[in-house]
Image (cartoon, rainbow, N blue to C red; front, side, top):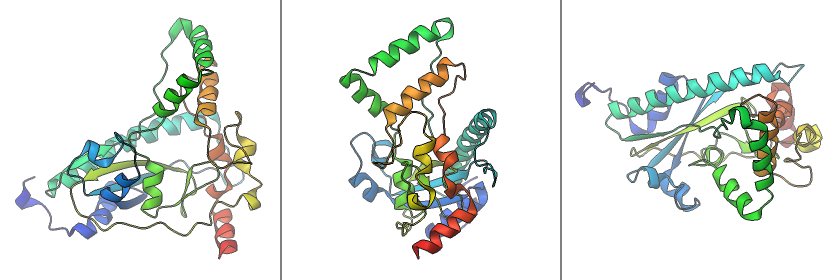
Length: 272
């Protein structure tokens, strides 16, 4: 499609048009300069697209957990992971084309899963070696940096007003709880940014720190908010040694009662 054939869409309306055209469940905007001001070198929007003016952060809803049984089986979780990541990447590429057809530069930043370890017959020996290496402070520091993606999707979502950070470090959204997979699209279009929303969805006093109780590795603790990424990595290695072959746990997300509409309503009304 040529520039003359492009639909005359106002820059302010682009995110809404993008959400409708691509089928995203959530779309928000962050000013690139504002995000870059708090990001480390090498992980700023303009490190990838020097002309970036705006960051469009979008999300797909994961498979919703059942109301009475919020923990899907391991098989259901893996299938949801594989399907949603593939769908998200394809949609993000179409979103980049959508922006380019309207005369804007676009640089897609998809969700990037942690690399898998193809260890074949020496799987158990290699996993033991990796676990031993993580005991070295310098290796732990490098591994911690390795586990962070090119852009912080959660920080972007919070800045755009899509949700808040829960006790376990996950994004919690008003409409979908923690069940959102995020991605970002950098563009030179000047778009109206969102702003952070008032917190109130994560209520450990109501759920009794469900995420910490569900965590099998101690990466999420009642005493401190956030997640110990390296403790997660150690548990992922255990999963791999069991033959799953996928770096995905998700127990803290599945246990979060904010995934259920009734809890979100209760938490929100209590906060107000």
